[in-house]
Image (tube, rainbow, N blue to C red):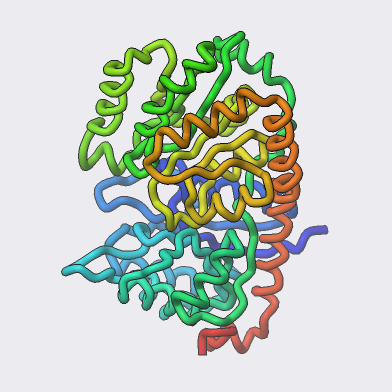
Length: 399
């Protein structure tokens, strides 16, 4: 018998296309699989100018950028039967920049909330502006538990934010993938006999995709059968602000380098099964991202879970996840290093197999079935705090 625990999730929600919405969907699915009696409601954060149709789990709507909307959602949750709240935090969803400072709307929500709360930090800038630092410190103080996805993040909370209370580390989940059937998947993708280098996810300039495009001539000199596939639509926020300017610049790079038959784009939002199929087909997975402070990458987690040979720039999540021979790490904005690393893997089947084995061994216990149980255990423990503490919003850190 399950616990029948009643959970509220504060997050963006599918069909909104953003990483937090996808993560939250996977988290809900994993926790429901771990306990079918679980009851999950969602407070969905919406863009100010959109009104979406959601599934029946969305019980409350929050208008992004409107502090009062966050407070009203907290008051509605207070009046519900919810036993514990989980906040999936990303700065853009919970505040706005005004006059050079971050205006924190999550604080409005947490100060009004009278339920135990677990806050998940997806981004922790190592050198935060004072207003961002205060937002993180406030969220930690007003939360009963805080969750991060890497050990590096625990150190950052202490060193950069002065938060010495223990955070729970639950690595970014990924599907449980059996890394077999590469030849069959290549046939399905229409690339039989080709060597596949890939990157997936929402496309935007922070991904540094142009540097891998520029690396391809050097890769092709040694491996003329190789192709680089970029799978994913342009980030919706970027499209709204700048249209397809970035994608068009990538296409121009490809044309200028005469790579039309070797660099391919699949401009669509991939379903999870499509992502799994792509990863199974992939020979080398690349994250050429530009932000050295990036603490979480869902695409990197997926590639590890699929047991891929990975080449990545040296952002924080990659440095931790690819240590001890689990992948190759290169400098930022350096097409030469990207090409050299990819070639070293394609030149050496033994190196490639070793990277794949170590990546899969590292990630197999982080797959969603296991991660869902860890999340559920934490929610239960948090909800089990004394009713008096919940009623007074005085749980750990909320005094």
